[in-house]
Image 1 (cartoon, rainbow, N blue to C red):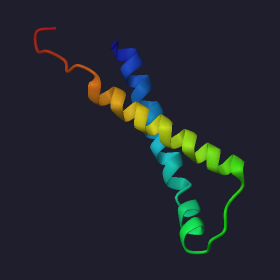
Image 2 (image 1 turned 135 degrees about the vertical axis):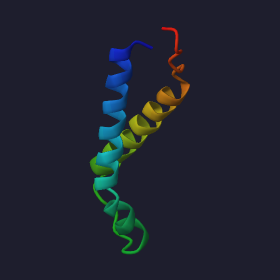
Image 3 (image 1 turned 30 degrees about the vertical axis):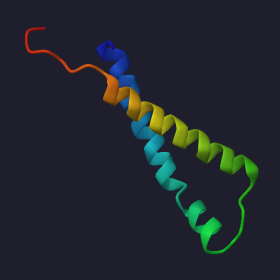
Image 4 (image 1 turned 120 degrees about the horizontal axis):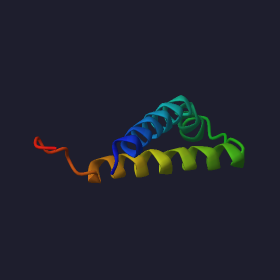
Length: 69
């Protein structure tokens, strides 16, 4: 993975996790108040979770930098 693509994946992953954290109160609404948000919000949260997990997986799979390079 090139340095540029690695940086883009890091930024995308950070943004996805940040936005997913901002939407965490939706889980509280579902569990304690038994109120379901709109389907579009649930789809957006699922997409953010998928992007965050995929980005984290890609970062963990990226090979480490070697000292001689």
